[in-house]
Length: 105
Image (cartoon, rainbow, N blue to C red; front, side, top):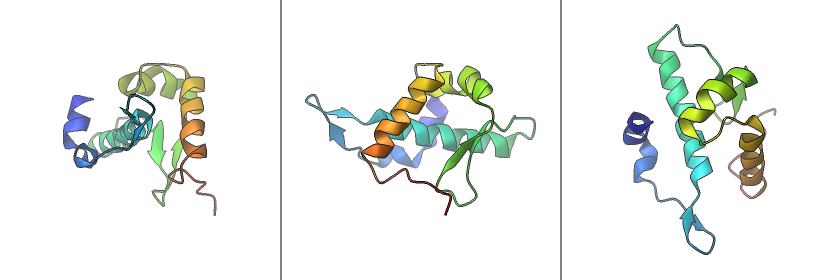
C-alpha cells in the first residue's frame, strides 16, 4: 500500500476534516487508492484476476467477485475483511456527498 500512496496524486490533495478532532476522511481516499492500485495491477499483469475495476466512464466501479474482494483486496487497503463494513462506509459517504453517484444513465 505504501507504493500506491507514494505515487498517488492524492498525496498532494488536502482532505476535508470532519468531526470534533478534525479526523480526515479516510474512506474516500482509500477507496480511490484501492481502485487506482488494482487498475494498475491489471495493466501490469495479465495474470491478475479482475475483481474490482472502474466503469468504462470512470465515474463508478464494479465488484466482480465479492468473496475474492473481501478476502484479498479489502485487507490490503482497509482494516477489515467484512464486505458489509465496506458497504456501510460506502453508503455513509455517498449519502453525504455528491462524489458517488450512479453510473447507470
